[in-house]
Image (cartoon, rainbow, N blue to C red; front, side, top):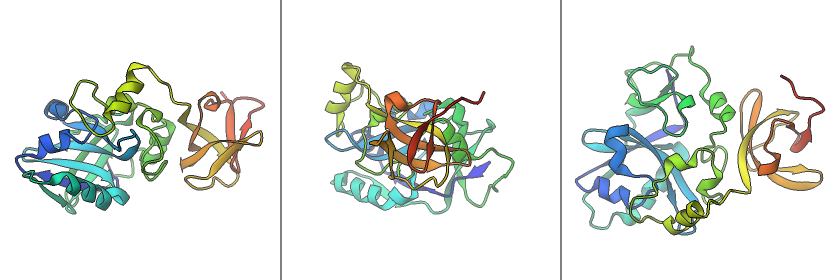
Length: 257
């Protein structure tokens, strides 16, 4: 089991916690009890992602599993909408996010079942097991982009992420950005750019660095593992017949099998 040190837990408690969060996110909280975990987006009115996070079911609260760099901004945003809602929002430093390829008692990652199982436990009750596969390497290989690792807040739309539809309900009530999401869904719009894991050589660069192909910009870099780098590129170039070398997309002379 691996402790995901870049994640932090925000606890949302109080009688109004479900209806409060339900009106702000893209997924349907009415399914949390059955599924135990949801992945969702918090969008602006133009449909761009401000935050993306997991929600874990708990008996007396909702536990938001978010990127640590997003924690305080997310709390500020929630407080803007709080008004007279009977809720309490606080960071839980005693809790941590854990991931494993073994079933144990954790639910499957809702974005992609190949990602294994994800849950929340007391930090002192579980030790990190190095026998587990590398979480980041697996995530990148499956092209699962995360905020602050592969893109920044307000940079992209939800439909530009792989497996995005599992994080959106098309039957629930209103939330910020729903009109844009609904239009994309009903018109079956495909994004011009997507995230794809490329092999790379040379200096891999940093998140947000521009990638070029035949002297034109075709995308941006995301995060990297030992062998692959996740990049946000034009859809027609997202294939295994290319690799990235020093911020340039190169067509392979042959493809290793």
